[in-house]
Amino acid sequence: MPAAHVVLTYWAPRSHSGCVLKGKKMIHRNAWAAALIGASAITFSPAIAGEQEDALIAKVVDAYGGDKLTSLKSIRIQDSYKNAFPGQGYTPGFVEFTALAQDAQLDLVNKRGSVEAWASNWNGAFHVRTVTDDDGVDTINYLSNTYQPAAFADYYAAYGAVIRVTDTLLAFELSNNAESAEYAGASTYLGQPHEMITFEMPSSPPVTLHINADTGLISQMTRATGFGALSYQFRDHAKSGGVTYARDFEFFVGPDVNILTLSRDVTVNRVRSNSFSIDRGISEEPARVDTSEMTVEEIAEGVHHVGTGNAYTVFVDAGDYLIAAGGYAGLSNRLEAYRETIGNEKPLQYQIVTHHHTDHLGGMGDALELGVTFVVPQNAVDNLRTAAGGEITDDRLQILDEKRTIGPVEVYDIWTSHAESYGLVYIPSSKAVFQVDHYNGVYEDAPSPAGIGAVTLKDAIARLGLDVETVLSGHGRIAESWANFEAAVANYDPSPCPTGRAICASATN
Ligand SMILES: [Zn+2]
Image (tube, rainbow, N blue to C red; front, side):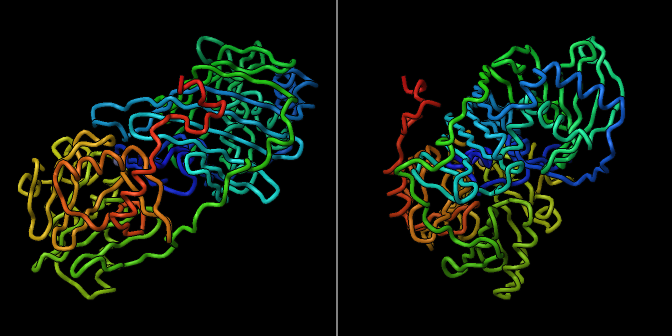
């Protein structure tokens, strides 16, 4: 995961939510974001609930508190998680878990929410709060003391993820959407008879609840999304204010565990209306550069930075051929835009693979088809072969070892907080580096914030003694000046909880 980015697209509201190639399937680069996003493609035909549905819904409502559930006005869910980011480990060998804390407060009457999330690990930190205020839904970034309009403006789009990870709220939604419910058959789960019911929730494909036939409690929720089959497990039920909830929650993407709950506390009808505002001292973030259209920008003679959204590639003219770095999906489109804009038809001969993370290999099928030779860290070769989806013969692989010079480009094998082995691209003639996931130039007229990734990148550049004037990003359109990059790094606060807010204050002790 990119350092400043912070998950849940949650990690960072509008940035870095690419797709990840995992096996042959495209999944979201971070499944917490997948859990958040509706990803609706499946249509669902509502039907009038019949007797079987009515009886099952009544059983669930009863198990979750009866009137106490149906008259619920507000709920607060405070969670401590371990969260995995598939394809984003420090090495390709396995995926480390990140500690993540979440404090969710929902006003069920007025359909408002406040969801604060905090995480800090070796590769970065994030501390954000999505909140419904008088102007709509905003996302606060406490690490930069700024806010911006949230990517998801609607109640279910913004807070559906919280509803889906909370069995109490699934029961509440089921009772409110009873007319869309359909009995989905009997099953057994963990040795107990279960009954299934499917119902419609806004901003999501239909959800299926697996209900313990004896107790009426929800053991599991499943739904099919563009990211694959998602499964939410609930166990160890307790009561709070007369309402039932599971203390133990796990989230799976396909067969892989993605979120484990370390603790969950639920309180009901105690959320205050002053929770729904932006804190004092938080100001609107600087204007972001527009990335909605594909752009082709000349950095220096023969050096172009090309892309849109969060996917950028640098193309370097080496005389008879081109060299590219930046491997997100859509590589062919970026090459086409480059060719159309500057009329350069030279063959793409080299593709530099920065590191093993699968999101940065999404365009490698294109590269293979274009006939490139890959320059790649040794530990990224397996993931590259999987992502390219076809045979890469040995003569088309150049393994990166300390330093390799290809025409006007130098590639250095460095280590940072982000990856054990990472290919840093340096173009001496223009004193530019191209990097991904360490620093993203996103603001028009202000340095973008730096995380630990930027700090360790700057250290690596210092160790190499490179003379750098421009920092190019694979995730951001801005070609940042070294002065701005240095200023951002100087501003980096290594405290895991600079704000001292309750959600993370204990982490600083
Ligand atoms: Zn990465």
